[in-house]
Length: 69
Image (tube, rainbow, N blue to C red; front, side, top):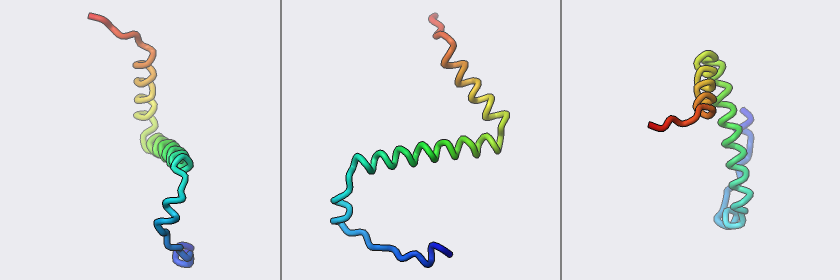
């Protein structure tokens, strides 16, 4: 319901041209990090054992030395 009562402003080309690309990229990065954390929490709630097993495997791959044949 709140979305229905919100008045949207039209965005013009001049509005977009005045945007700061650095600020925009920083915002996108922060939003993506939040999304990744949210996805990880959801995955853990759905399958905690599988999630922990995958994390353990990732940790083991980082700590094991490479084998040379």
